[in-house]
Length: 266
Image (cartoon, rainbow, N blue to C red; front, side):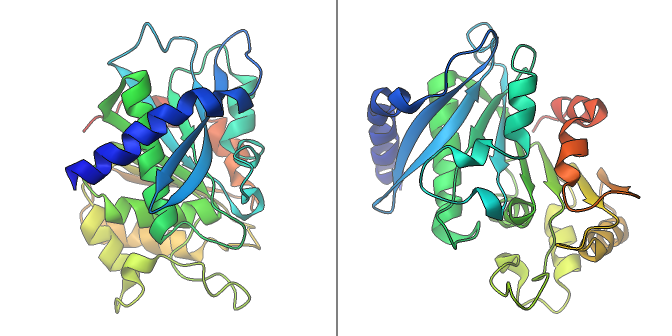
């Protein structure tokens, strides 16, 4: 296992110079850089936001893994920066204090299986390259990426210091999207209780719009109740009364959320 992990990491590092040619232009603060990683024989391109303080903060640098929604799928390695956390990072490039890893799923695929392995491989490569603190790994995702946040967290329950799922859910929201669900608990009699039992010791803050007509908030309400029933240490739920599906705009603009996130460590 270690030999295989070392193989893709060395390959990812070797690709950094080539992928860097596709980087976004530098800014007066942080910047996006393009990278590539190969997992299970598949090459995937992703972006890394490198904060202005990266060199000075090496070793204590927090790192966020961001999972995009359905509209940002593709193979260009860039579209995932166009909605959700990416625009916020551009607006706050001079002050945002953390490394952010933004992988991308191919068209018509979800955050599951091989795509989750690619996301974690990209995260590992970024930690190795930029010297992020392994104790300060955070996970967030929006819409399809909210589902993915649960999938990845359940696959690696000891890894992340905090999780922020935004307008996600557990079960498929509509019959037209039957492949969108949290795989790890799909066969559980009570999937909400199963998630709560397995992640009750992880700090979690869920966000959703009360008027969401794409992924309705009912699953997050059930999850929050399940976490309370399980005696979770720090699981929060914010529901925006007038918010629709794009709850990510308010979430990533919430200074209190970031302050809470940065305070968490494994």
